[in-house]
Length: 146
Image 1 (cartoon, rainbow, N blue to C red):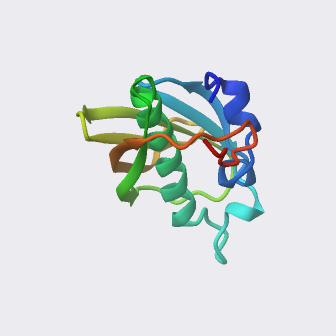
Image 2: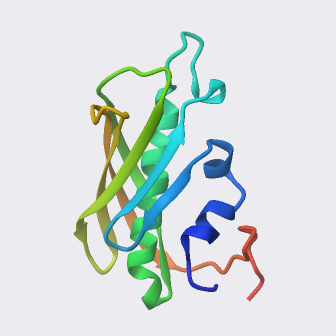
């Protein structure tokens, strides 16, 4: 797979694109994205669905953990996601940031926070990931036979 860039991350199909995530930084030390809350993020009572927060936290931590182990021909896959919902929100722009807590040879622990435009904490989570052999994918996110 070619080098991962913000352009590549923002161009691939999948859940992140469906949620409107726009990655603003991505490295093995920190990943950040933003998204504007829309109707597709909301549960029936007009608030961002908790699953969206869990998914965003899973996404930014998985990308960061995978970027950290790429040089070893690995990627990281989530084993556990523990997300706490701090403040309800139903509109506006949200920003997620992920940073490592612990990075070992076989597993990693990352933490992520979602804040609103006023800097208030909306959700916080920790994701435990396992380092595994990388699966080659093309620019569209499709697995390439190796």
